[in-house]
Amino acid sequence: MAEVHGTNRIYSVEILKNNEVLYQQLGNGKMDVVIERKEQQMENLAFYYVRVLQEDEEMAWSSPIWVQKEQKPV
Image (cartoon, rainbow, N blue to C red; front, side, top):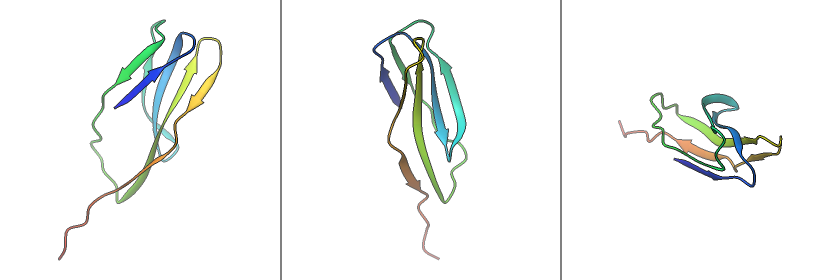
């Protein structure tokens, strides 16, 4: 889940996985956007972050979140 509160109207919010856009949602002129997504293709190790672009061209990024798939013992 990503919850974004802008200082201006939000143009788009993107969720990136390993530096590639996984999902994009347009802001529709709002200053607040909430995205709820579930990852379908888990890898052994990946990082995710959120990138925000406001209508005034200001941008923001979240810190990366590293995810490692649990490996079951053999």
